[in-house]
Length: 318
Image (cartoon, rainbow, N blue to C red; front, side, top):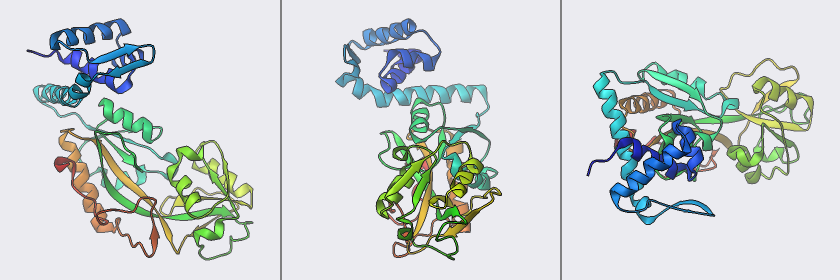
């Protein structure tokens, strides 16, 4: 039995979207063409892969069993095409969490990681979807559970977080602050708090009762909004270069120091050789710059490392 890769690819996209129209759109084909490809594949296999009904599309048991090897088939076909062409395409990497400037960390390792094609994802859910679809090879930002099945991540950097507040804030003159000293202030967030996991968990952990949201129009605009009100504060990784905003002060947080965790994220089974190069460059810089220091008696992480602060296995051994 010879499988048609186009039919298998149509199945994988539909299994990921659970919607024929959206899956067809990602493949730039009509919904009718997609349905025909899947019907031919089901006929070849002699079994239904999807249940179609008024409640939408669901995988059958056969479809669930077929999904993982189908993804591997598509990945192997793409790798074979690249090998035949004779030139490995660049590693496609997206970053997210733009307010916290992930590119400044990735820039420190990019020159040692081979050829990269960089892009910007909107948030963690959009990035994980792009990874599962094979639209990108890796991503860099804050990865937090639960992650979809089929994805793996590697801790790259733990970065101390500072509080930024108006110079008119009652605590602005302090040389350092404990997070719980901010409980009567208003946490200013660049979007809905339920979509900003780190800020949401910080507010829960340290009893921040008052929160308010803005629109993410860039770091300078966001910090100007913080500076406008003496009750507001927000959190920014300590190494982020702050724009010149009048009336703003950055204050270190201690006892404990919150740490923002940056991770490299990829799809399990992705065989692009650039993944190992990028992971190795991250590990090298983490050792040189002490990026992974973590002391539970001094620091706070929403998800503390479960197997020590080291970065774990590289993509080639995941």
